[in-house]
Image 1: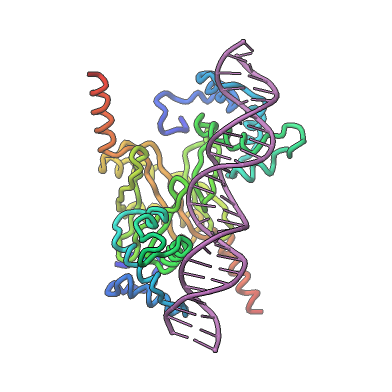
Image 2 (image 1 turned 60 degrees about the vertical axis):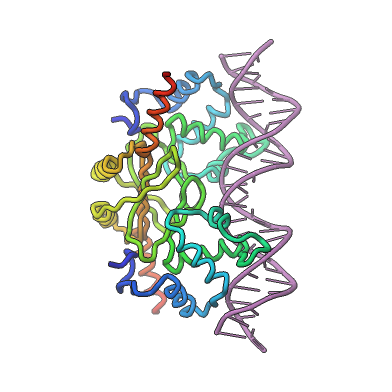
Length: 167
Length: 167
DNA sequence: TTGTATGCAAATAATTTGCACCAAA
DNA sequence: TTTGGTGCAAATTATTTGCATACAA
């Protein structure tokens, strides 16, 4: 099943992210640089959500081998999103990225205590979305649903702390 | 019906936003200043979504009567959110505000062409949210759902333009 | 060769903050 | 009189951009 809700032809999942990106570059007459190759590796090793800053932190520093300037990191992240490899959204003011290519559509729960993101899938949500959009005469291209709250662990820990406080 | 999904006692809707804010200030030992009074008027005259910049644009300029510095506008907007008068969320990188106090819970459709926000209400969405959260062991405090797409008008205009282009 | 990509540093944009002065309670 | 509030300007933060140079095709 295609990952993107907008593709008209099924995604060729036999392509690796790298190959998919090459294709993207070639069809637009863009170049395959060492930085782009290195970054796609780095990004697809990550399995969690991340922002530009976190990514840069894990990358080689100025002077080290494979160093990539922040400007290029920002530029390349945007290209990855254009190419359909990543998705991005805003959270607490910063831009958060997550893998898209090859990953199933999902939405998020956000724990406001530990600031972690959790994922969930819901077919009903998609249906609801399309119904609402249809009613309002909208041509849907996507959506973003984030449920805020406190996750199980944080609820537990808070309880634990409260008990300790009583001792 | 209470506007906030978190209130344990029903909201006293007989209070005006102004009165509600006074209450908020008093319970915290904060002060009722002329700036705060002026801003609450200005904000509750607005019936649409707005960001800090748009609000500041509509306010008196430096030197004019009732001028309020941007710093104070930013500070006060955050207080209004704390007080439950406004809600805020991120869109395209900027912080968008909307009236909350006295307004029913709703979510948004966002037209990526004209950048307008439209509202919709859905009880099913709330149920779905609570179910998902419960499954994941989340204690829900809120959510944010935005459906992106192209609104009816923009779809029409685009068609019109296409036709014109053919002439 | 030829134009795209990169690195660097400066520029932005949207907020936030430090601080001296002002003013509610 | 006391402590919170405001205006101003400087500081932040996250990101983008201009430009000279480097390099893929």
